[in-house]
Image (cartoon, rainbow, N blue to C red; front, side):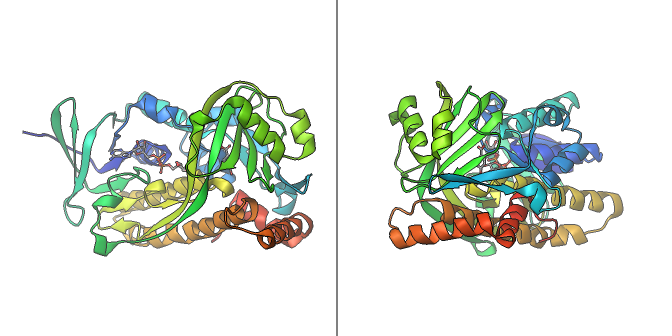
Length: 394
Ligand code: APR
Ligand code: PHB
């Protein structure tokens, strides 16, 4: 006999989407439970990106989870584009009337969300096996196994926050969903090290050998990436090989001043663009990576996820507080406008900065012309800047 329980909202997945949704609902007095496949430790072990738009920071403030972010996050006024041996700044603050981004690792944000949830006594079931979702056209139920026992949660709504490989999107009947996808013929090899970042701002590098990115997590911790082939294995790269390749791709000044050291983490990530439409199926709502993926070049993944969550939380609160369903009904379309803008921006940045494996010199010339344009024309630079810091209206 399954152990049965009832909540208003059952959330599948304890990544940044599920945890923030849980927090916003908890604050609004809507009871919710999060069911997560992995352990908390495993979730915190994933190294992901770390650039937050101002609207994401504002949302985290509202959710009451931004104290450490304000102490430790690094505010960036702009970013650097390196090509043809030189570096050029795109100044977000000047081009967008004062907007900036905050560099704060997704791992740290996840930790803050987890700790707050724990302190406030909201329930999360980690290591929930065989999670399945049922009845979302009428009476939703989430089932799972934990410590050998079968559990069942009845609820009003299910939030699918279980990422790209999750179970919620996969449970939707094929005829009810459309997906749009592009897989890129290259990946990113990333390295994390306890070394001071080479530059105060991120450097996005276009180089004939392939893309490179110089990023950071703190004034003493750096995150670097080099474009690699899809079948590359992180284990076959020694730290020295990585640093040598990175130095070849960045501008000479960065190559000269870069401080290297042992890696804390090294991993290969594929690049993908993916959108599922719609994002709502009766009483099941998808949010974050469960519904869409962007290649990381535009630093949009986390921001898009948290934007979905804001709209979903607002819609659920409006339903519970006022019995209004308009926001629930417009949720999918409202999210997808921003999703497609971010898809375009991320694909465009990716195309401008990466070496196409089957590309020719014509492609390289076009990329360099585009890079000169975005670093010399105020209009073109503003377009990049306003997309990077996040648009107010989409
Ligand atoms: N049952 C329960 N939980 C699951 C299942 C399942 N079948 N499958 C996956 N999960 C969990 C994962 O273990 C993970 O902790 O769902 C969570 C999904 O988290 P994320 O993949 O981080 O997705 P999301 O919370 O939407 O965050 C989006 O992550 O990949 C980045 O760029 C992306 O920054 C963005 C953010
Ligand atoms: C990162 O710091 O991991 C990072 C930063 C910017 C990106 C992608 C990744 O565009």
